[in-house]
Image 1 (spheres, rainbow over the protein chains, first blue to last red):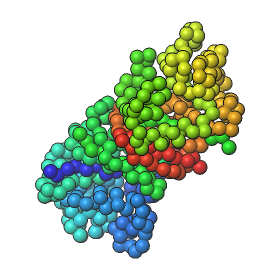
Image 2: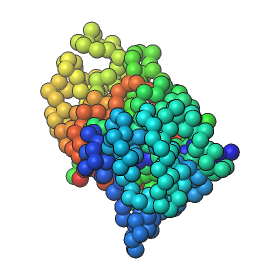
Image 3: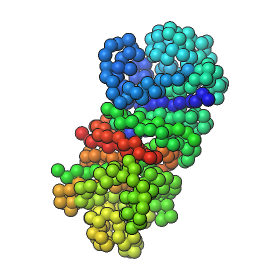
Length: 213
Length: 213
């Protein structure tokens, strides 16, 4: 069975993005600090065509997270800084011409746009008819493999509230953001039955995986 | 050097207590679920004079947290459900006549009250002149040992914001509370420099210890 797997990094005070997202601050102000555990890794450097980098307890987690993923879903704010209707087709994501997905990516938006085919197997599909439609399309595209729910907070919280997430793999960074976009916001008490699968103590971060019952 | 050590259990959505605390719901509604990892432990049962119980990965963490503690600080809501001036001296805490502290406990309150000596070495002192005074008194009482900051959220957040906490040992429970008292609320971005010391994967909970730089 193809699963929907939310993988996301959160601050200790619950934020997955900072305030005032912009082209200059894709993750909002201050939120690059969330990912400091990731940047030194060999896995990160390889994604960007660079040599070297560390292998530590996070490396296996990153590998596990990437395994068996056939499609990705993300919110529109994760795709870019533009709000409202697309002015044209010039915005092509944050990741350059060869994005690190290499599979179909479904972007949740209220505004229609033609699919955007990039290099390396990534095609961005813009889904305007809701999260369930995006999940159906992503699962079909994944051909039996799992679907990665990449964020941001709003997309994650909508899928969590709808009971559509099968697995939450959370990286908790030792960072206080003080403001921004909160994960788990708006969920009612006990609306998710979570079972802890494993926790990994890695340099500068803790990775906790939960199964949603 | 005597340290101030915050030890507290938090839900995945950041709450350390539920809403509507009362005599019936000391931790607020739903928040007993935060502590489900603790109740089956031998260490918990022993605290209540009972036999048996589990020893698992949490046991060593609980032991480490209790070691070298000479005094405790808590907020007034953690001591009891009464708000405003004390009507009389009949409320003697949630823990019966032999509370599980066995050392001086400093209760932050705006309302004066005489010290309350219980059995087993626990005396509750009511501190009305602020968090710094409570910390000075607790450190003096601890005689070189550490001071445990037990909560709740408001007391913890005041000490964190004032930069007075040396160590944060957080238990993260796989629970969504949806409402209540949030830890780390009101802290500005980067107001705490936290360094992850260790994370422990235990049944139904993850324990993460941070040093405050």
